[in-house]
Image 1 (cartoon, rainbow, N blue to C red):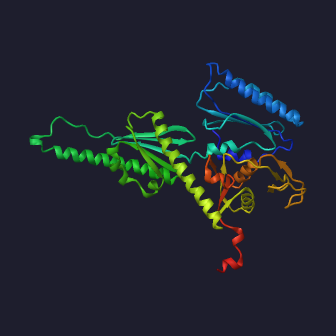
Image 2: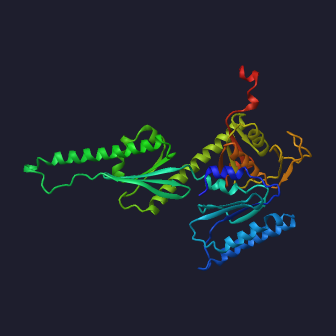
Image 3: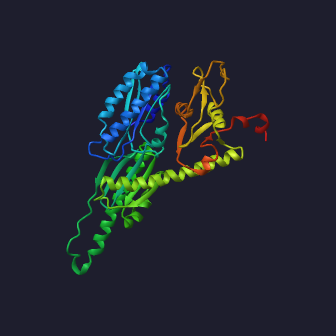
Length: 388
């Protein structure tokens, strides 16, 4: 699985020979058990990329990488569980393979001066690393969940005292036994809550989802520390003793998707509203490019339908929406970019800017499918405005 640091390293690579090859493989339902249809489709994509490179005079620099991709395609037997990304650049001796969640729009192969990183924005916009905690009166199970990867990290068991057949003479011991069971269960819930607090303090996860029986939740919730509650996204009903990883993944995934969608909608409204009232928001490619170059951008929003021609200076990295003979910053000759989104994402990743992928959204379509939430507005930091 690719990490954000590896993504940052890929974003920093530029090929002067324009032979940075990116392959994305999205598994599909095969028409036969041999998966030959998937293999044929992928090999056709590689052949088309090779023909395109030959027409542009770049085939010599990337031919070996493309032939190697043909060999890889022959062995990609789709299991409908994992997608794949491969980044290769022969002159710089780069070959990176990553397994991904099957969330890509389609399989594709591209060759350019930079790696095509835009499809990864949809993958990384799945939410931060999450802890899934299952608990009942005796058992606790903790899972790590990130990018559809689920792993059980630990569990502990605090057995309650057994219930005897007799409640003593005239039933006088019944209340004592019940109080002891309740006390032991409370200690178990406190241990569970303390462990979650430790994980929060160590920054082991950024969000939490709890699974338990409905009648158990009112006993668990009072013991959760405020720091833990702040990260709680929701809970689902499950029997912790019998829950399978597939059930846990399905239930927690639903809660996370709903949370990410709600946050995305709120962010879109915030960006558009701030941009319209001249606040900490920017919409439209030119405004976003200017804000990014000034270091104002906190979060970049990129729609799935965004595509735009532009220019980028290889000397200083300045990007513009209009073709010019010389860079407005350093005077060098800029290069044409068919789709400026890769250069835009690369710059955002290098600057540590958050990137949010926006699926089909009418309100965002109307503002150009690109926007940004800003940390500040440099054009408003003037002495006159500061004095107001």
